[in-house]
Image 1 (cartoon, rainbow, N blue to C red):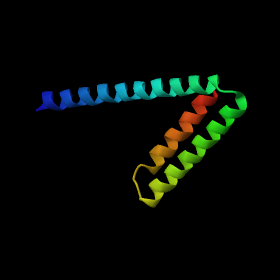
Image 2 (image 1 turned 120 degrees about the vertical axis):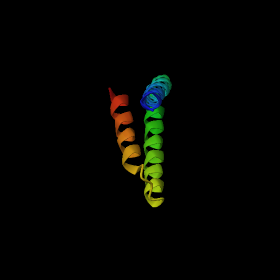
Image 3 (image 1 turned 90 degrees about the horizontal axis):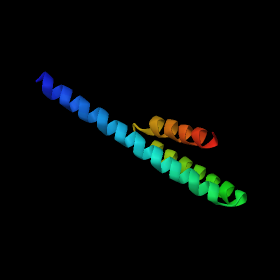
Image 4 (image 1 turned 180 degrees about the vertical axis):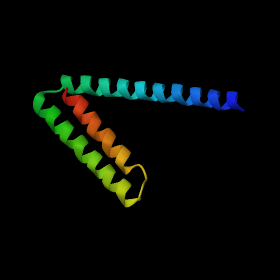
Length: 84
């Protein structure tokens, strides 16, 4: 029983790390695309994305999703990292 639980925990940890790396790859690709845009267009794109994120948070709140705080935190982290 203990081996089974440890195997599941190992699998979950590996899956979590893979998901984190996939997200990092996507964020890096996004940053690269933004750098390729003219500055005024990049600003418009970022503003549009922020509006889309706000809309998604509103939808999650409307649906009474338990993931509202997590989505909000990840959105904040994404934009904070993008600025660095």
